[in-house]
Length: 59
Image (cartoon, rainbow, N blue to C red; front, side, top):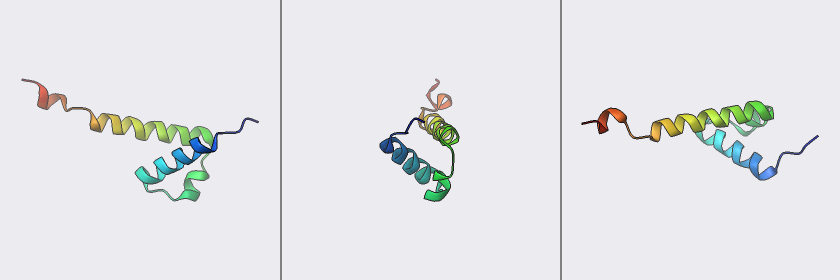
């Protein structure tokens, strides 16, 4: 069994707790793949929301 780096785990827990307001226990109860999927989805949403609005920049 491969061990997941604790620094990375802490980053994921902090990220999901911050953005989704999930308690520590709820995030820790997710298995690795599910937690990574949530992290990727939140990151995607953040990228989309922070991208310049195409409708405002068109002339």
